[in-house]
Image (cartoon, rainbow, N blue to C red):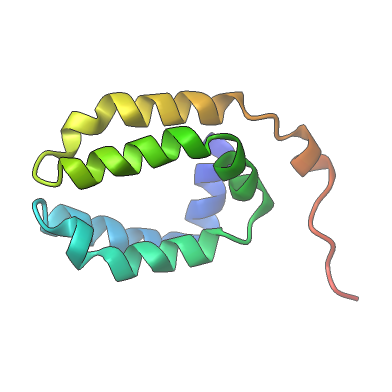
Length: 107
């Protein structure tokens, strides 16, 4: 998971910062007010193979976490167990194939 976070921070730093600031500034309405910024982060990260692999392998855990956030907009901290399950899953993803097969660069 640290690799995915490093990649996200490296390639999507601006988007992550804007989204994080929005969520922190809108504790009860962030789901609605920060949706566009969330989509920008998703667009930025969706093309990276490491993140794609984690999303694919841990989609169930991530969807459960997002559902918890929607149902507990006023208390996102109540979703800590969901995020822990997602992060636990992400730690188990085999990235060896992704690391040994980088995305081909156009010639």
